[in-house]
Length: 268
Image (cartoon, rainbow, N blue to C red):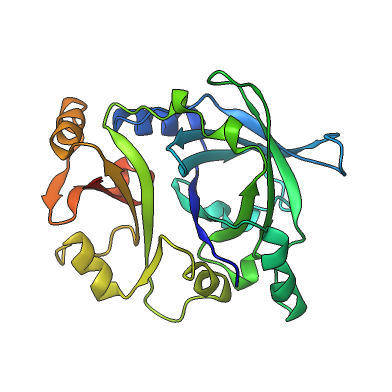
């Protein structure tokens, strides 16, 4: 299989305004919400995906905060709709998504055909339509996450330094940790081959986060974000009234304050 790495994590919300405010409270810069589009053919005669997203951008990764417009049962995110206010999208980057798709499709895995999505970039010095080639695993083979494989066709638009400065000193999203109590789905096993994606047993997950017995039943997903200076990040959280705990991994923030996932802020 071609090399894969973690590209971004997406959170599903029923209020972009509220969720963006929550991430800003943690000291992250959040872009203005913009609708997503699906390209129809080689020309950008696009149709709406019925989805609007805001983003927390780093140098080569990001967090997506997304909301659905209506209750269309055919929307590609609809099967995960019950996980509102939680992380639901696990996006992997590949140099050639079609080359990753073809052997999966050939052996009969439930994956969608590659297509191109669009979003309008209205930040930084460069403006225009950002384009992404991608495919996804269907819910029946990936109920834990919407696992997708993508390639940025216009990275110079997406990863602009103008939106990469954060009050908490965040630099990069470097890892996602999923607690797995049983046998993971085909989609999640596939995702575990990507750099930055980690499947852990329940005990391993609790040990990583240093969770005691009373908190172990909370969220079972954790994200690691590196920051320039842990003391400065702690001061930023303290000023906003966000509780954090110093652990051997760095600063730990509870899911209630971080979109439904544990957040680890580690030294860069």
